[in-house]
Length: 258
Length: 261
Image (cartoon, rainbow over all chains, first blue to last red):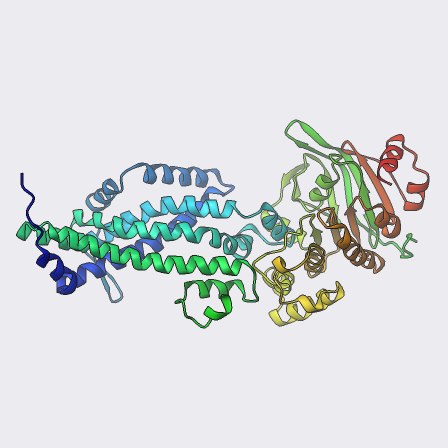
């Protein structure tokens, strides 16, 4: 067996002269990641709350959800949602058009992510002192209101760092939806390879994933740094601090926080 | 007339034969107590005697196994169904709690909210008081507990004594008929206990109805209309402070007082 010399030309052209289909593929990876992550957070939140419900079937359902979706391969889930659900060929959501492949992919990734997010959110809620809920209740708050106004805003600080890691994972995991025919970054590379048999396509696509995850790691680091600084206590409201944490580094809050 | 010179009113809190178990542990063994309007009752006793559990039952932070607790004539935490008691709905329990202020040993202020926001949170969210009205009231309450200049400060930047005073203001903001204090100075540094007790004494003299679980005998002597001694899940002795401290009747009370005074 012989390892062919690396064809740098393929790599350079994929990195510095991205073509139209590539731009589509990159965009698909980005929006599938973002949408699946957001839906995953919501599902995780619902499942976390269901787990704490007084109503036993909700707790059982929440447990079963995590058991099944954390305990089976996400690739299996993707195939199942695509081939078993029979989603409509095209779904129109305002200006967005989702093909059956994309909607099945997003659905599978979201539901899978929700199972992991449930554990993260649960841990965040559990980390809040039990006296906080008691204080809220002693003031006449019902548990839903206390959760929304008192517990979750505090839990958010604990939840955000692992949430950042989840999103990093999500961007890479989206490559699996190529298997059901979604044209995203990996599909683009795979197509290039199958036409030319140049494995350099995979080096180039790895580079692009690295760009995405690196950009995200900078954003994540900046968020975490700001959450850490605001922990020392300052005169900004908690909401302002969260906003500041998500804003670019040199925002109007920047100097005040350092 | 009470020892603070106030005329006592109707019964605000009535506990009748309250029993409570934690698993096999029988923590309340038939506790009965009546507290009248404007009265300040201090509950003392060794740790594990059930005094904290008892006042937590009064606003239903703990369930009870039998007996009944009424505040303002309303059964707390339960409703009667064919002669039996069933746990009440969350909505009703929450509504009843708006009448009962509670101050905790560990303050339990909301760390993500300023002192002012801690005080306005429940009036705005639970009672629907307009925000500016709630803020004006809160500022007045914080001034009353000596923290008028700390409205915009987060709890993390306040001393323990200051935090506990914010917690008192937070409870008062609901205009409760009854205030419960669960060892409010036990988690405080000695030098700041006085500022919290001073606020509580003032409240007592203004005629707030209060039940205070405490180890501060000076406070009990000064501010209480009645001192109640609990031991092993029961009330073993009760009386006005002068009588209680000078001539306790029960051997157990004498022992306890000799250790603590």
